[in-house]
Image (cartoon, rainbow, N blue to C red; front, side):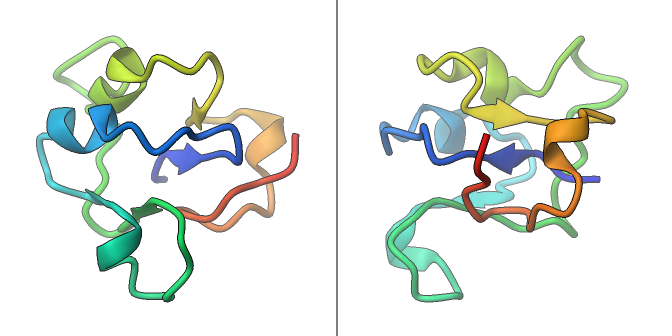
Length: 85
């Protein structure tokens, strides 16, 4: 499962700089054409086995912007697209 960037994202770029697999891209490289950050689910490994939580979430200055794991708030959400919380 990939991390999900919620609609509280402020587009600061901190997550992009910290992602070890380069799974996060900004709105300029978003394949959907939407003006939001995008997470490539096939690249995201949630930093499992390397960190206690995803590196992007640690770097993010916005509390709760990046969610992951078995969080029930992420059910039905599309990775890389904002989800309503």
